[in-house]
Image 1 (cartoon, rainbow, N blue to C red):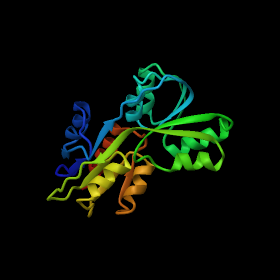
Image 2: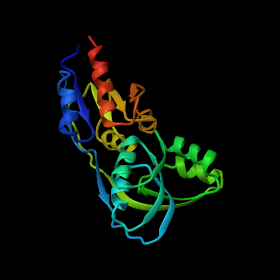
Image 3: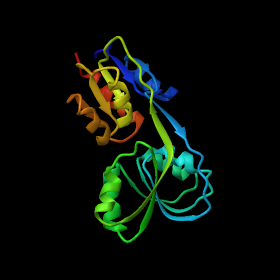
Image 4: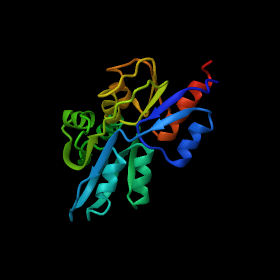
Length: 220
């Protein structure tokens, strides 16, 4: 095992997540590559179908007063936060494109409200618009890049969203390091700068870490 490998996490990890890294004999640095600001959201209407692609959107809306009947979401983390808030999750997908395809196949005649961030990706709205599915959007949080220059290279960098990639790359390069990505959308952003990419089997922080541990365990 390459016990000297150093990895960078583009978000601060929980104690349990840190233990996954440290127990593998890896050294690591962590910082928040992005800063999330939740908007004040108020509403008193009934929403039949709401789309969430981020747990940040869920947290922004949770005390808004909206009466949401059915939720469509991306990722198990987002689903779990919705369920914890008593919401009815009817569809979950691993990425926004996959969720859009499910909606096209099964809910084409319905109308949707997409709670999103200011840097939301185009894939989901584009697919729904192509199929003339009614979609309203409401920005409920903003993502700001928290750029930082590092004076040394890392053997691996953990990325959890396209924004974390943009933030890191704005001041640094991947060089020979491996990019470990939480999903295909994040990996697509990395591919603009590097082809050395490993994508998590599940879109969770823990699985991104597991992929890094497995990789460096097999490196001489």
